[in-house]
Image (cartoon, rainbow, N blue to C red; front, side):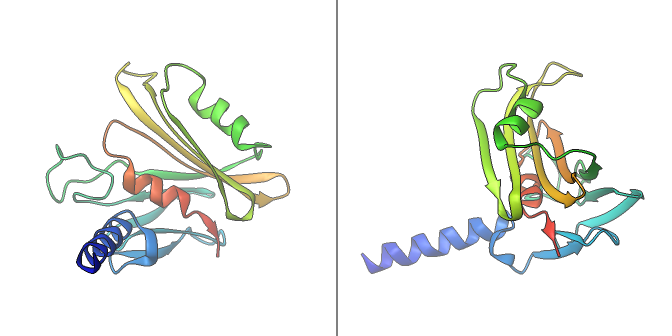
Amino acid sequence: MAKCSGLLLVAALAVSCAIGGGGGPNVEEKELGHSGYVVDAPTSWKVEAQVQSFYTITGAGPGTGAGTDTAAGAEQPGVQVTESFAMPPSVEELASQVCDGSGQGEVIKEALPDGGFFVQCARPSRATGATTTRIEAVVPAGNGKALRCHLETDRDPTAAAAICRSLRKK
């Protein structure tokens, strides 16, 4: 029994580190410019300020949001963080905005620390019709505004979801 428990603990830690939990050695806190907000992302990923209040978090390699069809070292689609002029009043409202009821299947809805919300759902892409996973996290930024972390992808969304869930005030 002790051997099984030890193996389960090791497996749980490995999964946690792979998706950004626990601040493992491959994940670090990344500042979003001078916004006062941060995310936890793989150490090899970069934060780029596109314009004021618009950030892209990009990186390369497997285990960083890519499916198994992506070669090691290939650039992954960027997670975007943008300022929004409104904070949704509830996780239900965010889910309605993001998933819009069009064949989304399972919808993951979570409350985040400090009054934020996280939503993830699969749905047909508006651009191609292929099934994609849509991820969105929203955290209050004061004065009725919010920061939104989002990505729509047809690849494994695990790392992007972990990055968006980690969006917080420093």
